[in-house]
Image (cartoon, rainbow, N blue to C red; front, side, top):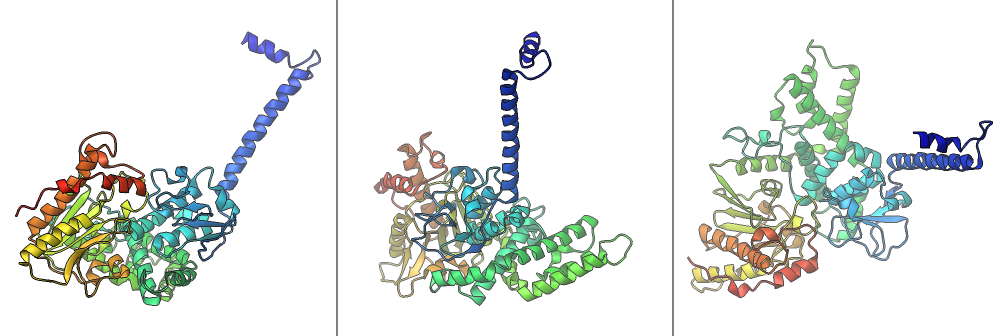
Length: 517
């Protein structure tokens, strides 16, 4: 302390005034304080004004400059926020939560330093329309409200894009009945996301076109023009509905599990009963309830009820162990769903039973489909994934088995699959005379014809499992991902398309053993 006192004393003269050294020290201290204050002010302003974006504009390949940013797709010249592979999106905004483009945008809006291009640009663009793209665009235009509903927006984008519903209970429930309302409790985050996505899906197909139908560029422009102005209201109504259910549940009032899809009417009884003294709700609460009901009717929010009911029904079927068997191979990230029910499952249900799956195999008796999930098409950040395998190799094997069991008779139906760089390669039996369109492959399984196979259920499962086990284990043995010699070591974050091709090319498929039946 003595040395410090002597040092400080040198800053003042005998009269107590600052010496030259004292003035320098004071100036330095002042500048440090100014820098600290300005830094805090900067972070405060970034927090207060994270985005200057005001409007959506149609996508242009030759667009340049700093006045437009791009979301949910790549662009050669514009600053980009997307979950797609090999984009210019800053890695710090992907982090461990950037599974969807909406995640990345919300990370930019909540990060202490923000994302500078969003504070410069006034426009945002995207080359397609889907729920993830819609919410990415909307969040940049309405950053403060987006932050208030961050959790819901992330859940909606995950369900809409990755087709993954965050289930709010143990997979098999608390009893053998596994009722659908127990799997997705009314008013829960999962239920809110499901309501939002089903509404958007219904309006998109009934008012405009289904995805991948018509001139996608022109249709996307129309869809953004329609949906962007109403997203805020839809969120408000869905959140209000959830608050009503939460309040009723906390007070033990009403049976919120039997919601019929009419958001406001179904909750009205609970709202009226949510007062211990039996009085009617306060005037402002009743006014808000009526206003929300009116807006829900005007927006036709009930249009999504049919799809939502289908998803809840299929979750019930999936978790009924007397009808459905679910087997997840942790070594290959492949889930097998085998059921005695011929009706295919909605993908919101089948893709949610095992969120760690990269591939979903559905077996409805001898009607089969194998889909490589979208999680392996994008740069998934929350968990490691396996590299995509070219399922054309598996298709060739399955066609040989079909021909053998068909006694060599000619047929117009063959196992077929698109290339592994497709958004969601779907291996199935197709009819050469009436091939599925991209829209049909992308759509719900129960909306397309699924043909019976001559291959037995057990043989099919064995061949499919063997294909993935062989391919991934061969990659591991050849050190595609350093660290071991089993399929587990092939998982990693950040697969590029080049790495995926190189990994697949490293496999000697001639070594895949012949079928034994």
